[in-house]
Amino acid sequence: MTSTALQAPRSARGRSTGVNWEKWGWLYMRVSGVILVVLIFGHLFVNLWSGTGVSAINFGFVAGKWAEPFWQWWDVAMLWLALIHGGNGMRTIVNDYARGKTTRGVLKVAILAAVAILIILGTLVVFTFDPCPTGGPAELLPSFCK
Image 1: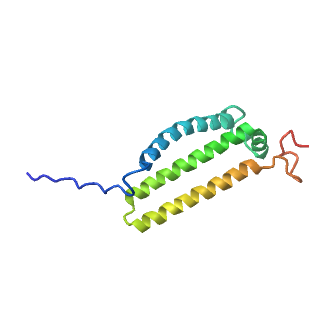
Image 2 (image 1 turned 45 degrees about the vertical axis):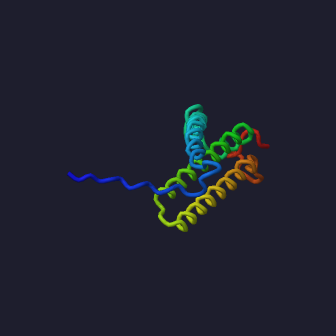
Image 3 (image 1 turned 180 degrees about the vertical axis):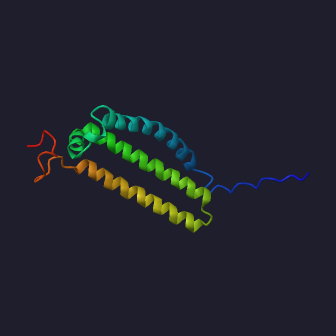
């Protein structure tokens, strides 16, 4: 009977001293996952179950919701946590499967750029959203618009 030995895993990259980014990334995934579950189920409850359902979601519904700072911050927190959570997960996959150092670096920079651009654009949309645009159809505008 022959025995096969497992190969040693790839050695850790980077400095052996300093901040353990893998540990903090692992911890972030657990904490952000729990917070995201609360945020997402709260989002689903308000948008789908507490009113007349999905048929009520239109421009006026979103405008009315985003007229309150609480819901703006709720959605921005969900956006930031979800994008960073997903980006960190993608970074872990790249670290596990990309062989070359250059390939790994390029992929991680692309992930970082995508996450940063989406966070910036999403945050701008939430905080610069005008619930009462001029010239908008009156039947689609929220009730608080003149």
